[in-house]
Amino acid sequence: MKKLLFIIAVTLFTFNASAQNKSFIGITGGLSLPGGNYAKGDYYNDQSGFAKSGFNIGITGAWYFKKSHWGVGGVLSYTHYGFKNAQGLANGYKEAFDLDSATVYIKGSNQSVNILVGPYYNIAFGKFNLDLRLLGGVVNATLPGNEVYLEDGIDNHLTQKKSTATTFGWQSGAALRYAVTSHIGILLGVDYYYSKPNFTVENENRPVNAGRKIASYKEAISGLQANVGVVYSFGK
Image (tube, rainbow, N blue to C red; front, side):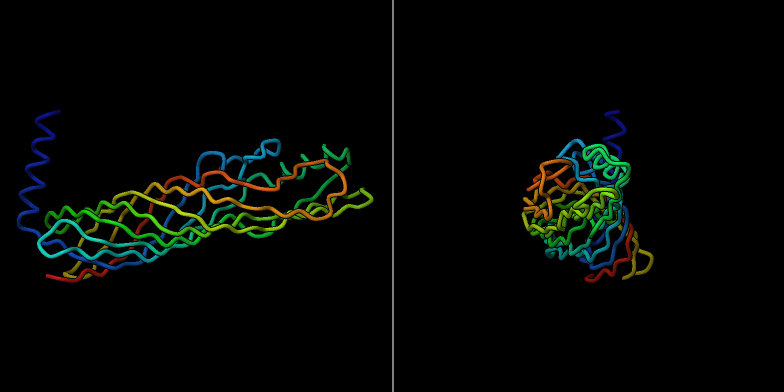
């Protein structure tokens, strides 16, 4: 194992000595895979965020300092998650209010807009560039609301309004770029992301304290992103 690591290190150093670090800008998109409580869909757990796998799209780029492996860059991205177990919500309300049926309509979606900047480190070898990054910045997140119709209830329309919150977030990862031409390339990247917005949740028409009801939500929005992209590289 030590010999293999030594060979890899020497190979990377040799290629890097003859390759050029290139600044770049690109468009990316791919999967967003949430984890933790945010990805749980349990009606009886108020920490559940009901988010399931979704997608993200964004603009990314970095400027590398002359004759240096170090640079600075950032990401402007939009992340959208699916919603899991809406039927489980309906069944929970039906049981809580002791009714024959209940229907839940989801209003909005689990999503976020992210503006992140930070340092990049580049390892270049041949037509490949490996970019390592640690970014931080602003995350504006949305927690969806819902409307619950209790089919045979007297006052049968309950509402949890959609809410938004802005907080600090960060992500860290790596991307491998391959130069198709001298300026156009493709990118494959993986990042871990984290933020913890504090949502204030407004409820309407809740005359009795029954059924799932949350007034706030503060759980980590975290997970993995796997992206592909097209980049334009510039510089010598």
